Amino acid sequence: MFTDGVWIPEAVWREVVTEGGNRPGVRDIETASWLHVVQVRNADFVFSLSRELDAGEAEAIALFREQPCAAILLDEKDARSVAQTLAQPVLGTVGVLVWARKRTLIPSLRAQLDALQSIGGFRLGAEIRRAALRSAGEMET
Image (cartoon, rainbow, N blue to C red; front, side):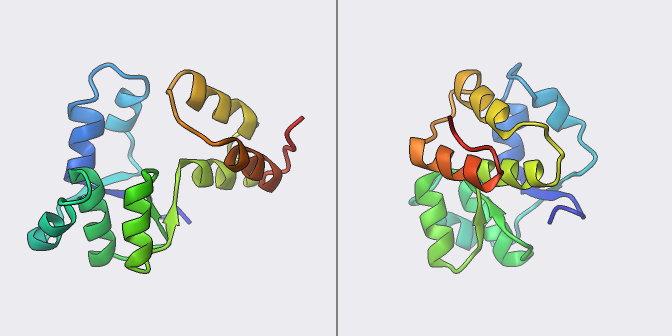
């Protein structure tokens, strides 16, 4: 799925790296060779999406339209809804972690979800957590 790396629009780079300060993982992202920052060409489409979404989400949806790939990575509910309305396949952070666990790229999905929630303040519903753990073969106890 990610054989050619991950493409992100400039607005996402700004949000995560430039404005990210000293948050955990920022330096790793800044130096990741598999991450490609891309300028979105259709500014009018981004502008129209920006009425409902933040700049990073709007540019991500526009970038997917310009350069389709396996899925668009989005976590925010409103952005996911817009992308799905545009028939774009959506994958979130939890989906990426399930994918990584199934390929043994991470030893424990549960540990990653725990860290996301406790350290990163990631909001994750109990049913989504249980479904992810079941999907990865790590049944909730």
